[in-house]
Structure formats: C-alpha cells, structure tokens
Image (cartoon, rainbow, N blue to C red; front, top):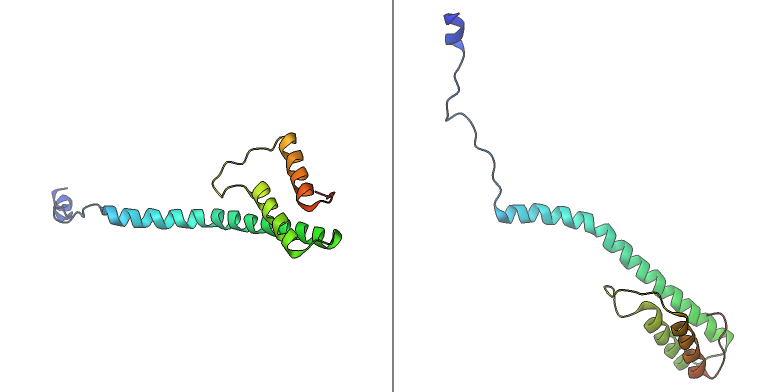
Length: 121
C-alpha cells in the first residue's frame, strides 16, 4: 500500500487555480449586453405599435378628407386633434380610459372646428 500511495501526486497549493473574479466594469459590460438583448424586442414592439397607431389615425383623417371634402388645413387640424386625444402626452405617460363625457366633448370639438358633423369616429 505504501508503494501505491507514494506514486499518487499530492496537490500543492501552487497548482490550484484561483477563482476568476470579474471587475465591476466587466460585470457592467456583461449584464448590459444581456439587458440590451432582452430589452431590444420590447422596444421594437412598442415602436412598431406606435407607428401602426399613428398610421391608423392618418388613414382615418384621410378618409374624412375625401368623404367630407375638407381642405388640407382642416385635415391637418383634425389630425393634430386626433393625435392629442388618442396618443396622449408621450410614450411613458399613463393612459387612462376616457370617460363618456370626454369622448363626447372630443367629438363635439371636431364638429365645431369643421362646422360639419363627422359620423364614423
């Protein structure tokens, strides 16, 4: 038994490797890259939904322009009113559900601006 035990190499303290320690800058880089990869699809979805909503509002006003024979200035004014009412203040604003009174006031404001009654809103 002594012969077998003598042939086994003993581990020395110098042979063991130290655990790898990342610097703060390296940790920040790694977690930032992971965070960017995870947040990118969310940002792309938000951006594309905002663009789709804006295009939907533009199509609505374009339809009104041809149906009610509006001028370019009236259409631009309508589009601004629609953006203000439907889009809100910005991306990070909290969007609350509009009350029936607010919706009716918006419709009346549009009708008053044009002097015509706009239906399909």
